Image (cartoon, rainbow, N blue to C red; front, side):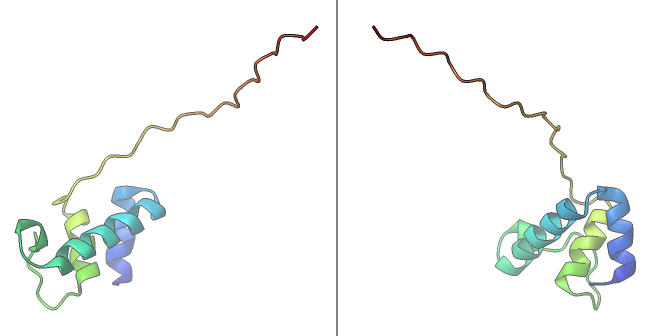
Length: 84
């Protein structure tokens, strides 16, 4: 992967873990062959599949949504009735 493309894509996405997931999913789509999802959305030239995916992210040819962060709370145990 091209380091410059990775840096630019990370600026767009913001989270390196999300970027890795986006690139790997897109590379799998490009590798699958057949269908409209497997065609590059940018001119590939001499780029590898990961660089194509990064370029698509930079040029906003593919989209993603960041989920909202939800604060987790520990459940409180229910009180049992006393036995007689």
